[in-house]
Image 1 (cartoon, helix red, strand yellow):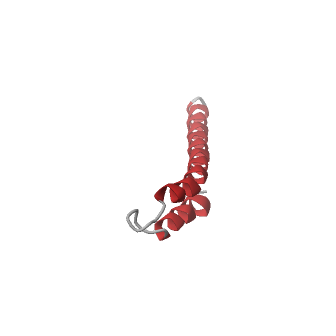
Image 2 (cartoon, one colour; image 1 turned 60 degrees about the horizontal axis):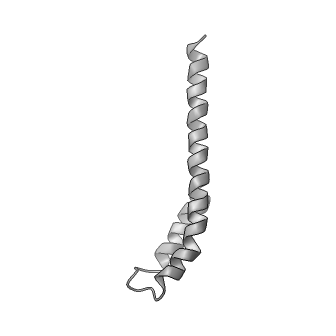
Length: 64
């Protein structure tokens, strides 16, 4: 997920240049932010789910 979505978005943002080189910083942010935040939330939920599965497997393993 990170390599498929967030890294390409970050690279696109980086290619826009530094904020003092961009004519309309708000437009660049508006184009970038919603997609990045959405996928960052998906990544966070997936990480939390993975951690929950790990904890559950340790509980099951510890109980046997």
